[in-house]
Image (cartoon, rainbow, N blue to C red):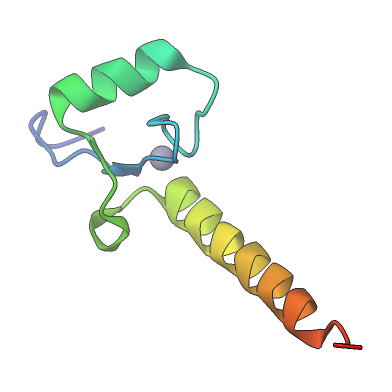
Amino acid sequence: MPRDSRQKRDLHGLNEDGMILCNPRDKEAAHRAEMEGIATDDRAAVTCRKCEALLYKRDKTRNEIQDYGRSKPFT
Ligand SMILES: [Zn+2]
């Protein structure tokens, strides 16, 4: 049971399309989140665990792709 109904809600992350990272298919949710200020593109401010995990995963994937590109032989 939440002791305080005004308890701070999780701040979700947004992807490139302005969708919520942990719910990227729900346009309504993205709109609502924006209206209510519970989503941010400032990844340092994200508190939602799922969004944090997705941001982390995305960075990791991006780095791996970069590494792959770098390791390609220049011949
Ligand atoms: Zn989230």
